Length: 417
Image 1 (cartoon, rainbow, N blue to C red):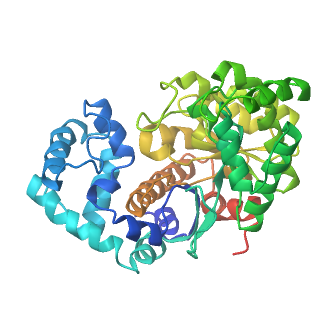
Image 2 (tube, helix red, strand yellow):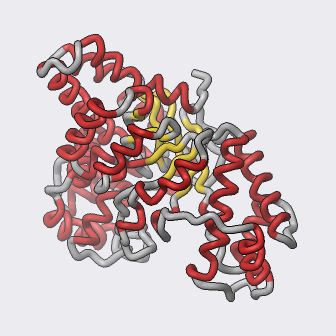
């Protein structure tokens, strides 16, 4: 093992993007083997499994294990499957890929979910993570290794009167006008910041295009007033409400700037297990964000997932815009080969202070563990190759690893570590 590999493997990590439940939530929900699938579920579905077949829907554990094994054989080649295998092997000493084996390890996973030390063992001790940002739609995390980020989509995905009512309830305010609604959204942002939120998150690439126009207040008010005249369940179409959504996206960016909150934006690939827009991947090309990036030069935009599969345009954008930051969240597990190539290009093109090296993007800590193990290897291999070809000195490679795994996140998110 090279000195670069040894150095990267011992680095303490700031994890910039997760969807991890807190230990308390995991215990309450009694997570089991089938709760750990996450990304693998997408591959099982595209291999032919009925969506939701492994959810808690009345099937016995033995029946679910049989369904899993049928589709595991079809998908065990993918990196999502590799991550699942690594996690189960390393953390549960599990290698018996059979119905009987799954039933046995299922009890071990449930026991871990009730183990008060499990999160510290997996995240802090085994993974080397000092802090992780998690998006689970609450700022009430009550776990020292977590900091919250909040999806703000619910504040601008307005299509019914009920959508407005949900924001009223969360903000604890009554709304009668668009101006009043903006006050409610601002009150939410202020409260979330006070409760520890480190960034806002815009995930609308999953349900509409990233392209955003600049509607007038009057245009937005007209649509808002139409929604206010609807019943709770009746509403307007996506096309009819898009100008209002665009106006609110601008507002959220403006208020994020005011509260000194970086803005994380989903770009690139959609997971079939969660996509609600029919997987219209072109809607998530980071190039569609260019008007917003050009307008808000005082914002800090963190574009997630390296824009894959539109990473060539993404690289040019991150290189050219001082207010845009690259983020490798998830990228390693879609394709280690692609991730390594992107990292090679990123080193050649993008200032190292603008690169965030890891976000597990998992809903369970076992996935985060396996993903980080993979990421460390890819990053160390890439840096070793860069040193070997004379593009970097070893000291520069080690400093680069410090930057992307830790220092950049501490600086950008103003973390008190």
